[in-house]
Amino acid sequence: MRNYIVSVFSLLLWLHPFVLQAQELGNPFDFPILLSGNFGELRSNHFHSGIDFKTQGVEGKPVHAVQEGYISRIGVSPWGYGNVLYIDHPDGTTTVYGHLQKFAEPVAAYVKDQQYQQETFTIQLYPEPGHFPVQQGEVIALGGNSGSSGGPHLHFEVRDTESEEVLDPLLYYKDRIKDTRPPGIEGIMIYPMEGKGMVNRKPQKQEVKPVTGKNGKLTIPTRIEAWGEIGVGVKAYDYMDNTTNIYGVKEITLQVDGETIFHSDIHAFALHETRYLNSFTDYEEWRNKRSFYMKSFLDPGNRLHFIESLNRGIIRIDEEREYPFTYSLKDAYGNTTELYFTVHGKETRIEQPDITNDLFFYWNSENRFGAKGIRLFIPRGNLYNNLFFHYSVKGDTTALAATHTLHNRPVPFHQAAQLSLRIQKDTLKNKNQYGMVRIQNGRPTWIGGEYRNGWLDTEIRELGTYSICQDTKAPVITPVHQQKWISSRTFTFRISDNLSGVKTYRGEIDGQYVLFELDGKKGLLSYTFDKDRLEKGSHELRLTVRDACGNESVFTYPFSW
Image (tube, rainbow, N blue to C red):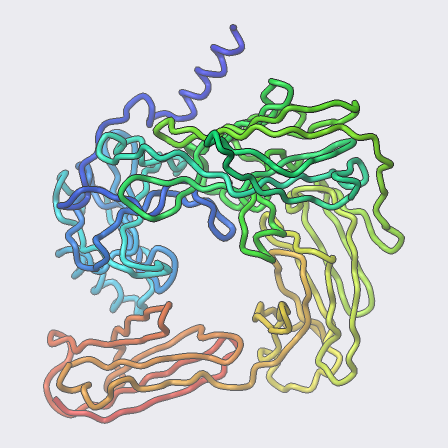
């Protein structure tokens, strides 16, 4: 009992000030709240760190501050959160408002002045405390679709101001959002531990699909046999009333023989933890099939704080009997789905992996690999589990470099590893035009890198197939609706690049910087005439666009208005 009390007290301290000082927050909109995304949803390489408020399918809805405070940070970017505001509050929390269309005055004027002073569209600003005080309910912006948003909505977060840990904002809004629908389970995956377990007499993972029986309960119709050490994973989504969206599952509990061996409750996490999602989920399933299976067992390098487990969630099947399994999935409202199934212990010879040509990489140490034309260094803390590393190479005397396959399945790094490849045909005078590429389904994705005495060095975020390409082509600048430019008082271009991607752009009128705004999703670049900075008369526009290799395109346009 004493240990239990200490654990609860520690949890309360960890959640401080959220649990101890939480108060109801205001509605950021003038209409009833509906969510298009919830906290902790599984996304590419990260957990969703907030909730997404629907904006009735449109941009331009007024966004209100949910609590009094002051604007502590302002961001503008063609990617990520797009136009974003951070407001610090007296209770020690910070609220975040992302994907905004426009900032309210005088913030909009302040941002524009700073963009002109720094001569950049992308900007991060940190006003002095009290420079922009706000009251609860005050209009701070208009809702939008900026940055990497997939449609109009407001991304909203609650953070601990000091630590920047993020908390589930739904805790503040539960009474204003109806949810009577439980999570749904779409699949179960059984994982034999490599060299230590078998499932249905095979060393590979096995997927089974649940069905709904006549009694309305989920069942697994497939017989599952196992021997040795296994783990289990679940593919599941949550649902809410009055929407057709799917959401992430907040709480997962797995019991075997009536004993809880795994429990996750994603109510808060630190931002530096978010990439552990690639260990929490089956990364190979996501990479190859875009299917998220949540593992109910822990890799030794997984450091997520919202997970508890017994023996890291690994189950030992060592008796020929029935092992009862129970999955319990719960949302923030307590709506629960349970799945009961049986794993039959069946003694089987456990196959050992063929590691004749493999190296053994340890998860808790640094690892190095070298062969002809390649060097790989994985710093400590980047592997989530031990790895029998498999390497193969495909030579091509006509290519810039051989094609190197680092392992036979996708494996993520928590941060990055250093990869160096030798250039076979080092003929380019401009060495910046070389770049590392990752090859998937025969298509290269530019990684880049730094040239060094016939080698190319770069950082990679996962194992895969890599080679070297060159980019000697300049970006393409395409005018959009040029005939309407003067009447609309707006210049619009579409900019694109064949391989390395657009890195920088600069617009000038009569040699002076002008602010072009970039919509990263559409590749659209636009400048609206600024009457305070552009006098009527004859002028010349000059737009310069460079890619990551320094290839440059220039567009000029004389005009009068």
